[in-house]
Length: 62
Image 1: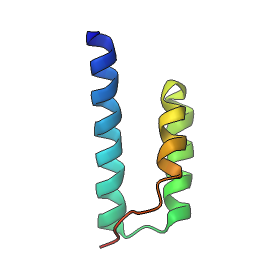
Image 2: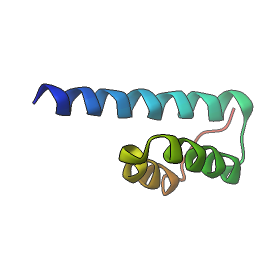
Image 3: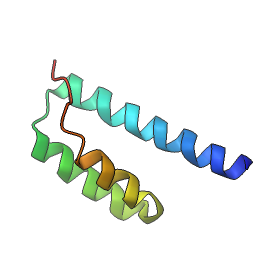
Image 4: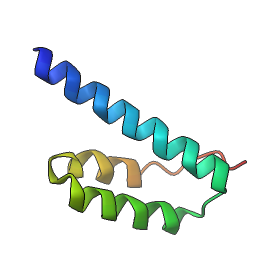
């Protein structure tokens, strides 16, 4: 149970980090996808999470 909670916490941290990065840099969607693919290769166990994030299209820019 604790490991599952830690995994979820890590996923949330990655999600918010990428979300804030997108807002600060005002990235376009394909820049986010490229970043996600690179990170997904580094963390293959989180690849399903990044695929879900790629489908998330309502990222507020600015």
